[in-house]
Image: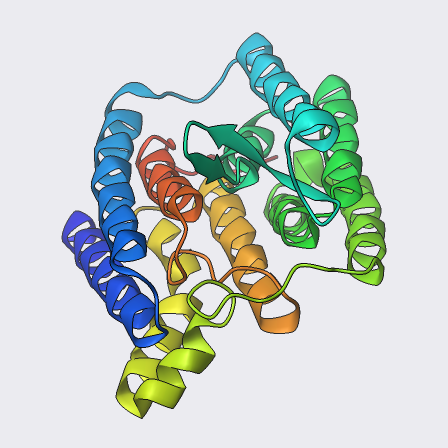
Length: 274
C-alpha cells in the first residue's frame, strides 16, 4: 500500500511538472530532459532502495567528506553565473550537485552524527553559504533540525549545527542575487497560474507535497530528515529566487528527490533512543 502511494505521487508529480513547464513556456528540450531525469531517477531510486544500507562510521565520514569536497570544488572551480557558483558541468548539462548531495548528507547525518561528522557538516554549510546557495543551506539546516527534534542522542550536536546553518541562511540571503528568475524554473508555479488556474493549483499542491514522498514508507529519523531537507528546498522557492524543486525544470532536483525516495526504503525501522 505504501509503495503504491509513493508510486502514485511520483508519477503524478512528474506529469504535473512536465505540464507546468509547458504552461510556463518551457521548451520541448526542457520537457524531454525532465522526463529523462524522471526515468533515470526512478531507476536510481530502485537501485538505492535495493542495494543501499545505513552507513557505518567510516562510510558516513566518507560520504560527508565527499560532499564537502565536491561542494568546495564547485565553489572554487564550478560553473559561474554572474559570480554565483552552484553548478558542475557534466558535458552539455549543468548539474546542481547539492540537490543530490544535501539529501544524502542529511540521511547520513540522521544515522551517524559524531564530532567528525559535525565538523564536515559545519564546513559544508559554510561552503554552501559562500556559493551562495541559501536553498541548500536551508535544506540541510532543516534536516538537522529534524534530527535534533526526534533523536535525543544527537540533539546537542545537531542543535549547534542548526544555529550555524541559520546564520548561513541569513548570510546567503543577504548577499545580492544577480541571477534572473526563469519562467519555467523559479517562476513555474506563478506562470502556470497565469496560463490556467487549474494547472497552477495542481502545480502548487504538487510542490508543497514534494516532502511527503519521504513519509509514506516509514517515519524514522532519517526519513524525517529527508522530508525536512526537501521542505527546505520548497521553502526557498517560496521566499527567494530559487528553483521550484521537481516541479520546475531541472534534472538534478528530480534525481535527488527520487534518490531520497529510495533512501527512505533503505532506512531501517524506527529505533527508540534511550
